[in-house]
Image (tube, rainbow, N blue to C red; front, side, top):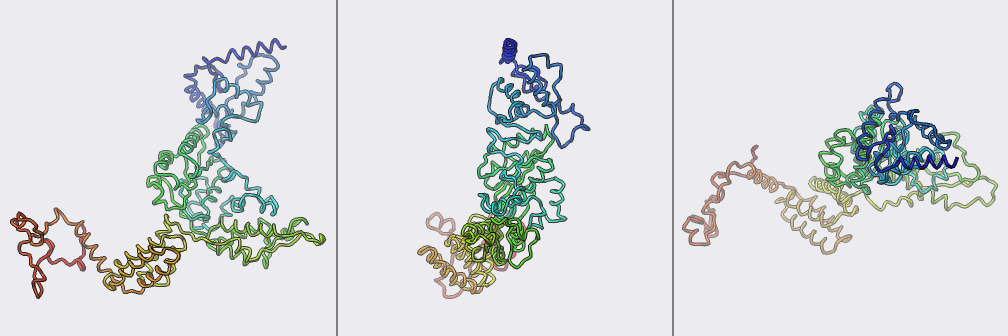
Length: 612
């Protein structure tokens, strides 16, 4: 027996030579230079040979079974190995798909064949593998690419409701991530975008997901909407979902996903949905990587951004995607989200009947009973500024603090202890020390525009409010002062010539003392400009001058000779300054033309520019 085993091993070692590589599909030997081209033909042939009626279209094609003619008689040890290999006939081999992974380590042909045999004996596979559904399994070189996660963080969130409330509050995962919705029915606050009877809702229900750019403030539900699409895609098996973050992913990671998506579409007839969080972090050249693949449908792109896509996303990419504007969550939507959270955590709201009667007493005698005031929930809904993530996490923080500070009942006879979360506890956990304001983003321009228009409308209260929004949000006071100098000439102008010196003085004072002392100086200037009479005559007149220059046809008229300076003898001989009347030398009005002949009699204060 030992002699026979040694002979078989010698035969196997002799068959593995650098001059011949065995095809893992048809098990024929080919030269290394031709094996790649043969694999493409062989795999496509195996796909076309499978009958459509016998195979579900949503499943990847199965590899054809190994013919019995190639399994000759051998020793019992060899027969066991062959029997294990033949058991794989009904499912695609992971080694076959691993050949198409571009990031697998470069190994010898010996390693390829050993991996084919060892995959039937050990559940641990090397390199990038694919399971029965064609999904990429984790392995070396795939840390940055997550294929078809159960949640965007790879955590099965469906089991969150099966855990005890105490466990949900003590786990390291933030509550906003743990309670992330899985269906559109649990998705609140964006009815204009994904509500009933909307076009996008019908497309999502039919799994026809278009390329999207989700634009909205933090905590409005951009990542959650992508998570819902991922959950639906995994449940129905209609698409492969891959998530990347532009803050950590590189262009090579994107190209890797696109290559896998191309193979997935060709071999398994399954689409790939790529979610790029913070897509505005990619520069213009990195965004160009998506263009041809989104155009031809290789991948469906879903990008999330808090910045205005008009400024941060390529125009060519915007034309291939649909922009969905997600609004800041309303107080009512935040109330629904918080109600769902307290119901899941088993927290009872004082003065309200429990939604589920069986939850009236779910304490097992060891865990405390947790109650929360309705005012506490209302405070969170109002103070979180439409940010569901901040609201849920502040709720978790307030409850955790009270649970941790509670002491066991010393008597030990009255069952579990009762904990009450009050409004003061919530305010302490949600100390709003910031205002939603981005000095380099769209909110910056929105607030300065509101300030300008409020002063133009002589509304001093609104002007002070928008000034406070900018300064308390961290805006540079010198930027505001420069805008006030501009306003003094543009909107006040000659109606009150002292407005410009007032604005310039405010700018200099802000430059001298800085924040926070200069805030009252800016407030004084803002109120002065809001109360001042308004006149835009100068602004309109100069705008007419620019229009006149732009619309002029032909060469611009030359300066009249009598208006030209004549510092030299030659220039005087040419007629420069000839006929000029020096006004201080006359006691009355001087009749003299100061415009070119083509513009005689024009009044830019009343002139209306004509179309060019």
